[in-house]
Length: 248
Image (cartoon, rainbow, N blue to C red):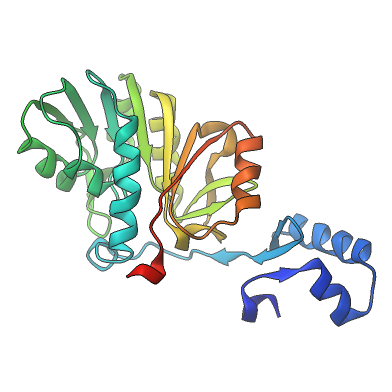
């Protein structure tokens, strides 16, 4: 029922199974503890598994308009003179096109694609982290990258994620990606997560960024107001774009 509908309410389940709302809530709590669903205010969502990373070329055009809308909000967090980290992904990539020119910015990235997009902009310095190049993700990965970033301190870091559970945090499809994110987070004064609607409710192999490692979430559609309010209650600033899939 949950997998078919994508979301169920306590009242609906109570009626279907002929038991009290309290019984349903206890059952949902038990199922969530076993990571079989995600409880929401008044109901539950399915946990969608992320088994592997889709190649970069296939992801580049997915949710493209939503990613641009998210990037336009995220870039407003950048201040003149900042040194920022842009983690390589198709979600952070559009930020490169909206960074203000001649504002004394320095961009650190493990993405050759982001570096190439930024280097043609006026008055922006670029530091490209070197390491093993992941063919599918088209980013530098591994211990060499982690060692480089460990020597740096940036004002703001911008990340994306394979999946996001509003009550746990960001998840990664690979162990390598999870450890990379940990290193990037440690180097940043402010940690900003960019999340498209499709990533909400997805669970990857590892929890890469618990909620305590996230300062700001910039998102599109895909999360309910109660879920976003839960993030706010955990001390996370939430910025939501006005992009709507029905407007495409």
